[in-house]
Image (cartoon, rainbow over all chains, first blue to last red; front, side, top):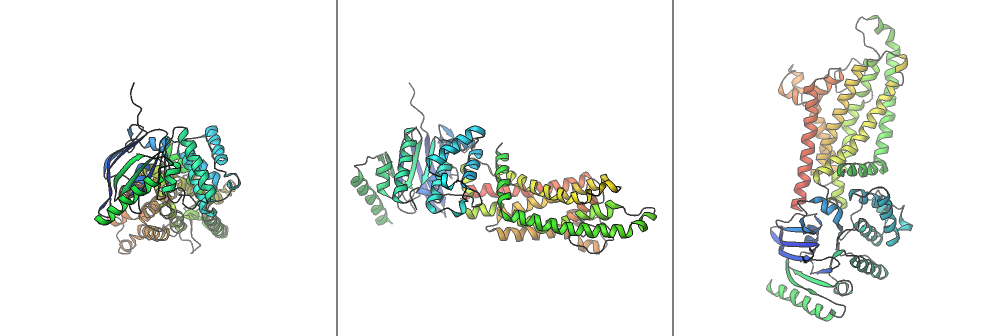
Amino acid sequence: MTAPTAVLQLDHITRHRAGRPAVADLSLTLDAGQVLGLLGVNGAGKSTTLAMIAGALIPDSGAIKLNGKDFLEHPELARRGLGWLPERAPLWPELTVLEHLDAHGRLRGLSGAALAKARQHMVERLELGALSRRLAGVLSQGQRQRLGLACALLHEPSLLVLDEPANALDPVQVAALRGVIREQAAKGTAIILSTHLLAEVTAACDRVAILHEGQLRYDGPITNDDHKMLEQTFFDIAMRGAQAA
Amino acid sequence: MSVLAVTRLELRRLFVRPLAWVLAALTVAQLAGRFMLLVQIFTTHQIQWAAQPAGPGYTDIVGVPMLSSILTSGGALPMLPFGLAELALLVIPLLTMSTLASERSHGTLPLWFAMGQSPFDMVMGKFLALLVWLTIWLLLTLAMPLSLAHGMTLDWGKLAAASLGLLLMLSALCAIGIACSAYASHPAIAAAASLMLGLALVSLNVGALMAGIDNGFINWLAMSTHLDSLVRGLISSADIVWFLLVTAVALILATQRLGAERGRG
């Protein structure tokens, strides 16, 4: 019996920004159904890492594999297998909510009845019905995040990349977001979630990775009861880094 | 498939933005005014020109000048409002300025890459969408002289050659506009750069022509040289290749710029 292929595999990826390594020699794997929380202080390299995983940035060295294939060599894998929600949901202000879902679906290769079904499912799941004909340019920050998440999930990706998704959401919306993450993970989607909120990680993730100065300093499982341990580990790493600097 | 998906999205965005509609309405109204003036000139001098052995006809006085007259040495017409070619120099920079520069300012540029779209797919998809708009614009302009075609003797060949010339010019200016938008950080900068490049290309050889040089390299470089031949009804593969070359170079530059941006971050 062969071991299942990891959904995401980072092999020694490095990326420089402004002459210094923003991410240095980072390696990790993520299996189907796993929710990985990526923690780090501001400037730790979380967003750069996620942008590389999403294909928005090219690493200087190393390889990123999606379902066992290098996705820089196979961009079609990103089209069908990856959903990405950056810190600020990127939307076209002149298009409505439904037009966004249509456009994302078509660019991901969906069409006809499959597209209509996926769009309807997302509208119901993320409660976008009342906003469906509203222009993205007039949505509130929380509504923009919901639409961004709907666009990222529309094509049922095998890997979902979320960069600070709870920003600008109220507590009710945060709880709903956690529900969506758990539901998606139960379906087998691998999820990588960047945040600087420790509570977010213990509530939504089953594994945590801590980045500091672009390097992976901790990678291990986490449960809801591990908040104290996580807090201690996180501060140890951050303080040690600050003292070394 | 991917290029067509981008084209479809861009067409949708183009047609829901007020800018495209405002530009279309204002320019078509202005061209309609030009058409009325040209028809008036033609009806006033019709009998006089008909008596001349090689006198100009409806195509020379109304059809082709609807497309261009100032930029080309098309005829001895009085100064009239702009034709399509002259308007294109102003309209295309406004239309293309936000194609890529606004993606950058809205933060949507990385999203395209994350959706597996290559820089080529993006540039080509956006180019084709704009070309659809520009073709509709050209057809609306042509519809005016063609509306009287049933009662006139039209030189279909000459009008077709002039229309081809205009389509090639629109395509080249559109590609230049997209390239400027790929390099500029702000849409207004892209529009200014595209306008200046367009004006430079059409007026590059003015000095040479004033000095009596009409076959030098500088004339070959100028867009007006190649457009002039086509507007006169002379279809030459060298002119067509010139326009295609300019279009291809501009699109390649835009593609390379986007690729470099993805690499650089």
